[in-house]
Amino acid sequence: MNATRTVAAVDLGAESGRVAAVSFDGSALTLDVAHRFSHGPRERGGVLRWDLDTLNRGVREGLAVLDAGADPIISVGVDTWGVDYALRTADGDLVDEPTCYRDPRQLDGMAAAVKEVGTAGLYLATGVQLIPINTIFGLVSDVRVHPHRLAAAHGLLMMPDLFHHLLSGAVTSEYTIASTTGALDMRTGRWATELLEQLGVPTRLLPEVVEPGTELGPLRGEHTGALRGCRVIVPAAHDTASAVVAAPLRAPGSIFISSGTWSLVGVETDRPWINEDARAANLTNEGGYAGTIRLLSNVMGLWLLQECRRQWAAEGRVDEGRELSYPRIAELAAAEPGLVSLVNPDYTAFLAPGDMPGRIRDYCARSGQPVPMSIGAVARCVIDSLALGYRRVIESVVAITGGVPPAVHIVGGGSGHTLLCQLTADATGLPVYAGPVEATALGNAAVQLASLGELAGLTDIRAVVSASARTAEYIPRPGQDWASAAERLAALTRAETTPAEMTSRSQRSVTEESQ
Image (tube, rainbow, N blue to C red; front, side, top):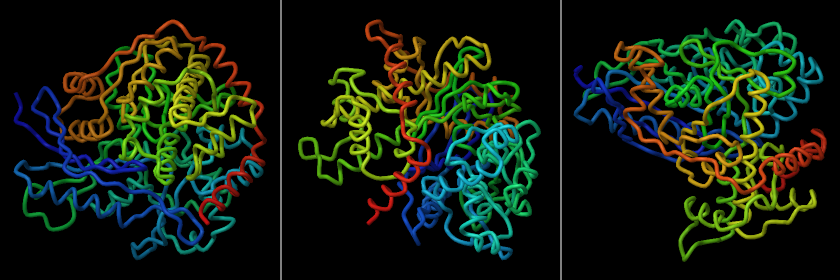
């Protein structure tokens, strides 16, 4: 058996971050979280921005904990959420703090891009779904509204690329994170320069695209302990791509759901699917590890419950004198009858921070449904709607690929949400296997270990993850009519206000709630 080797996985989600040591003894992976921290965007200068100081401090504190440990750390890699970017000057400084994909400017950027090249033009040039959060729409907003940002910029770095730059000095863009931009041609893996030039985006900003597993060089800084001699190796730097690497898929064609602030629902394939049917279904082609493509769609995810919980805390809603926990919210939801009220999880007005319970009640009232008033009723509405959102995407994937999925695998934070996992099985009629919760950090570390020659590739990685982490099984239950509920939700979605009206309402809502 090989001697134990340890790497560091830095996993930055849109609500929290963690720095973990992941050790491999030749047969199983062991994960030890050295440091966790919370973070979030805040408004500065009228724009929602990421708190880079908090993020950087959290990463450095985690690495300091590892450096003080006994086990040598061979390499370190960073994964983050997708789509957001930083602009850096020729001197290496940042133009400003990175903007957040939830800022309303993204909606204006999307409207301008659609007007310029059309939805088909955007999709067929890249294979990426039309969704306001895409990087390309932030860049179009920069071109039209914030040209000083681009004029001052020497280069663009996606969020994990920024941290790899801070750690190693290298200036690159890792393939899986670049694939979230809506600016990469997924047929070729190269930047869609013709599209970007048509939209006025300066292509001089774009760095070289590198594959996951690329070594960037030694870790910068003074490290006298476990990090002495540590290298920087890029993992699958989009957090979903790392999570799918560690998804212990039991059979080809299985559906994965990377469940966190966002839920990304799809299937792993060996080629991109860029055609009119895929565009009509708004499925996206994102890069995966080892030449794979993730054909998927975003569903708003646990963000809805996160924002509900924030609002309830702001209102002083407590449970027996304590702040409402996510497990307690799930218990209250489980006590409510199912499929009473439904919302489209991807409704544009749900994208921005704010009074989420109020927006959900407003949606139900305007659509003629019972209005959920209690914490449990609101949470049950969200969880039922997420399960139906997953069902919708799975049906679209099946229609495009012609495959029949044998199972659903849920990884990430949502895999520990018992009610959501069971309702997903009920809604889809497929067995659900849930776990591991820390799939993203495990996938991040596994790609580093494969680069170091410790693992043989994707099949070997998944076998090792299966031997390292426990999963829970959920079998579909008979009873409720999920097919009728899916039809109800589809009708509600079709009857929603127009994109322009939704954009206007969302912008007003963000402005009002920030005052």
